[in-house]
Image (cartoon, rainbow, N blue to C red; front, side, top):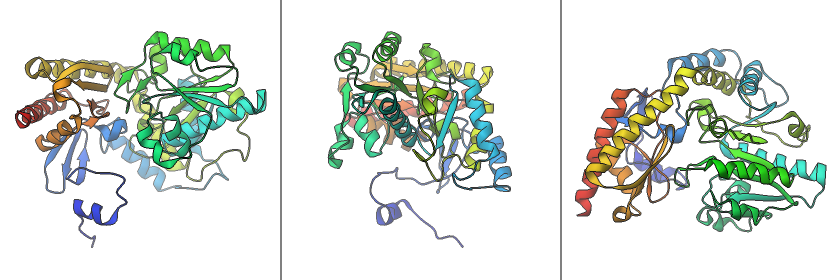
Length: 405
């Protein structure tokens, strides 16, 4: 018999790196979730943009169970058919010619940055090692990626940090031009800053980065951990912008809830990560390959990608209607189903209060910093769930307003 657990057990047993919600999710289906007490929630958080096909999708369940009955894990001394098929799917659908699989977005970005430095070292020499990243970016929690993140709150307590990383201002091409030179190995950028406030890049900014990188023989890395796999209405956001990177990191939605990450690049660049230069024990295991392959099959279809744009309108129309009535947001921004509501000055710093109030009303939302309420639901969420969830969110907003008056 399984031991019963509660939210209080987190505080007793777990390292306090998180402050999870007061309820414990118990089961879920589609875009609805139920806690241990049977209370229902509509999920607009999507596991932080992971559950692109919702919860317990029957075809993902089937793919996982079929593979689990055959082969789970072998380690990187062997390959396997599901991961090779997924690699081919990604190559056929993107600019990539080579893929490296890992377990998370941070690992994918770590691999991308290591690739960039090794390529620069091998081709141009050890003095070419600089990395330009952006303030308010969020490439991950490893020591290298948290240093690239440009958010001292996440990195200052872990000093000394890896060197050779400079931070420019997102959407400010002049700030990049002032830093980049022939010793720069790479520029890493999110086409849409997620944790940094759901801030889409301006098309001219990404085009300008491509030109600067070409001029200085630096690699352009797109961090598409959050924006990839259909989230913007294109399979990857670089397709929306028409700017092709040299390296791309992907994770989150790629597994639809099963842990997987990948670094995509060209044959020429990938060749520098030769045998023994980089690795992972779990990365590219058959279970992840089978689930990821089914995710790609289900999402990389015109009807699903076009449906993301339709759902974007459902959300923005509903959020604008709430805002016209309650006057909470100074901006509603984002692409596809990565949407941020920027709180106005009257509610500055209170995004967490809106998230907590939403949970009380039975809807799960995210925050992106202290001033932005973020939505990253399933790409196939129904119109009924959107309407009901926004009605619950509106009630939550009203409760925050009453509580602050």
